[in-house]
Length: 186
Image 1 (spheres, rainbow, N blue to C red):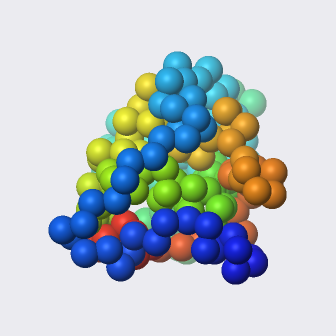
Image 2: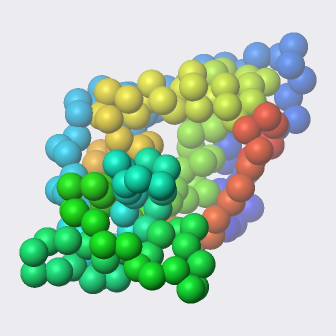
């Protein structure tokens, strides 16, 4: 993280709300916005250790999470529900009463990606909260592809123009930012 890299972007976190930065739209964001729907992901296999949600089980709210303890030869699943106590017996249900939950995404965007996004969309980020940026900038980019922004950037091979490193990779940090605060404070 050299100082030249850090100083290479427009810092609008301290911009007063009466000074609008000039618009900029590099080609990577144009390519991402124009992307058609990505192919659907294959179904998540249900096996021992999988996480599922249940539906249509008397006495349990639809959407209750569960861990698959075993899969019987007849295809029934033996589950431990998320709200079960250690003393509760596992629940045996038909696979038709469950829906496999996808694995939590391991991909994340780099700091270079956040800087490039901030520079490319400076005029659209102007004094907006993270929620407003998500609705007015990020969702329009990702909605046509029906995918997350990280998946879209991965698909178009988005990379840092200075280092050539991909904008998307295996996450090594988790950053939390309240949606009610200005996006540029992120």
